[in-house]
Length: 278
Ligand SMILES: [Fe+2]
Image (cartoon, rainbow, N blue to C red; front, side, top):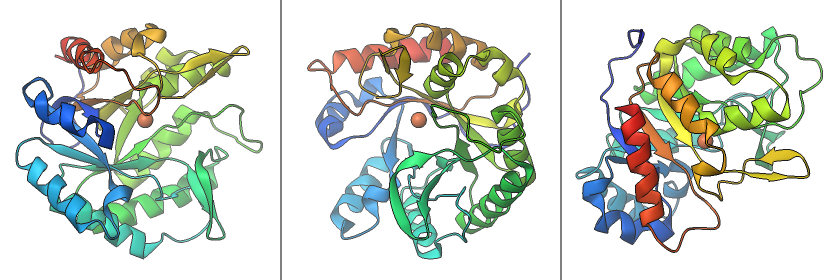
């Protein structure tokens, strides 16, 4: 039932998105964490000491670098300096793949400070695919594109998100980082079936998964990365459904706010995800 993977990549397991506040706990509980994700942007300037620590850590734990500012959906060329900088980080930690978001974060070189959704059009998908292919060639490793949360359909779109994502990754021959919490939140806010979404993307390209916990406020789900995943247990069901069908190589848990006093809460989520994934 599980499709054959598009890429020959290692199964690096289940881990946690590395944050400075977790550094010590991750070291202490390394035997219970298979891998980590680092934010590549935090390692590219005046941070040689930080990068050296990540390189050292990568000798003991596989690292999946994740970027924020590729801005692949922007109507502009790639920022080649940024691409070279994050590629250097990815190569330094001997990453199996590199990921960023299918969105834009800049307009006319102005940083928006957020992941902004793209209108789902054929022209935008073609543009994103060309840039993804260019960056992936430069990386020398698979690029994964991640689905983001958005709270309204961007006007002008002519495709569903699943069609848009599929066209970009198929045309670019790149992979997917499927954030199941983002998928769940969008499906609730925008009223569609998340299982149908999964059924309509090229599952052979799904390499990595993100899980996080959001909040429900004023009848809207918000992607805050501030809660246990159990806040919406339906996400565990989506993980089970996906892992039976797609050759998922890694599951990463993201927590950025309202950090638990007890790291055991994070470890329990890792173990839960591992049991589903395995
Ligand atoms: Fe994510």
